[in-house]
Image (cartoon, rainbow, N blue to C red; front, side, top):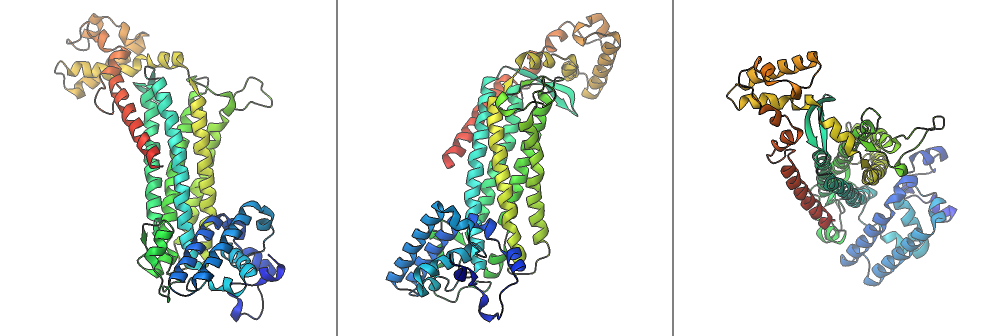
Length: 470
């Protein structure tokens, strides 16, 4: 692009003087919206076909426009310096200027009937649709890692916690699938945001619609959209789809952060539930014994960046009057960065989880904590007709006595237990085994081995459906 060409603005006719150099650099968006070049070229080709069908350009002219756009796109893919050295104001200015240099006055015909307002709204939607698919593919890989670890560790018990205190025993696979459920909801949320973006604003003009007889439905179909926007004024300023995509990414990041927190705890010596993979850990420059869970800590830490994109766009949108405002230039950079961060953390989480080794010995030993079967004592009493609230109180007193006497409830003689309730007998010992406590939670969604196997198969079926969709 020549210096003279780069100075031609798409809006300069009523101005006597060009923009201040510092202001021009301040308002330029080329440095980040160049990411929309694939969408820009696709839109330009579709528009060339549309204005050809409408008789605005001849068939020959339309073919010349499309051929020139193809040539420019090929160069853009291979000539990074051409993009880096450009002084274009934005992605639209870049392509139009290059087209004018290549075709002269014919290149100027392409912009007939359209505005950068409806162009960027359309291209941004196209980008979100593509980005959503990329994120869903990454989530599918993470779910695959979860399913593989759940299958590998189907018989491994672990302590389940509430308030970070031992609560009830679980199967490790049940814990893994709990995170899997959250990530599957994330995949669905991302898909829903892509569906919201699947509406074509092109043909809305700057705000009032297009004055030329273009077929908007054909344009939408050409660009892969399912429908067209209903109101031109709304279409050029609607960024709900971007907010919904950012919300989906923020929720995904939150779930990843929770998974990361579990693994940071599990890797600590106090837990010792996992062996961190060398490939996704770091050491200390001072302490030679250290193996740090940096992958999980960075995943947890980067959550704030993704939240920031959502909060920034919400703040930008909150006070805007109707129609397009230049504030909306602030929508893309935040979303691009949030997408990049989300994609990176999902991919690293999937790879780290797949490479992690769970320490069955530590998990099984922790799952034998007598405190984890306190509820079994209360449930045992209920089977003899004791009201649950009374049974709960009796069980609490039994465990308090066991603690004071320095023994496990499993070791308490029946005679001592009968001091708390006459219904206790020798069968309590069987009810308090880890295997019994797990097996009793056999309803769908529970942690009994059979229920977990069924849940894993159902999870894998949903994952297969997601992979088929992608």
